[in-house]
Length: 226
Ligand code: NI
Image (tube, rainbow, N blue to C red; front, top):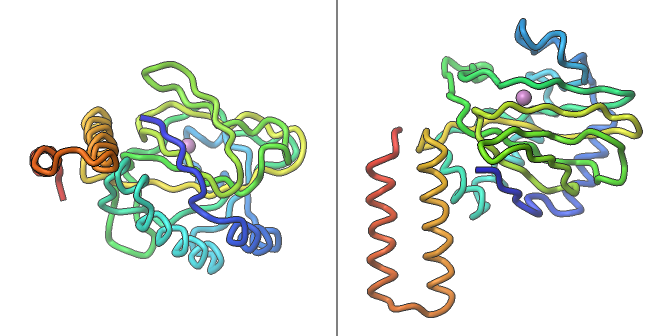
């Protein structure tokens, strides 16, 4: 399931982040690429232990955990600390699938990358190219969202970032281990949650809404792992 989550960050927050990132210590993204990705990856990143990356990352994680659409769609168990990248001057990242399991920096903890996220810090008219192209079971999706917006998609997807031929594309990206490993099960829970919320907003019968919420939680009990 691929969904766009608008306005994770407001315009003031986006401006503060961009100011901080413009003065950041960018390094060659290949420093964190696996062997197979070395040839495909042409971008810049902040080092994972960069204090700015940690500080901004914590604000992003707090915003995620307070956002109903992210919580409903992703059902997060653990979020890997957000990373930051920049594509300029033809930079790109060819088709790849992200590593299935990643180490949490500075901790004896690994997470399974069930859900991938990209948070945009540049508006679409500020750069040419730089589309996030995701191959899903429903075909190819091309994603380029306004600054402050987030896209979430299954970690199992083949994806690429097309060359940025004008301007700069700034983003944060990160992975989440979900309570529910399977994308199809997460999708059913998300659809059910949306339907329950819509029914509640329309003043649907209290008993029926309570029954559906019960089914939702009992499905989550069946499918979740912690
Ligand atoms: Ni990737």
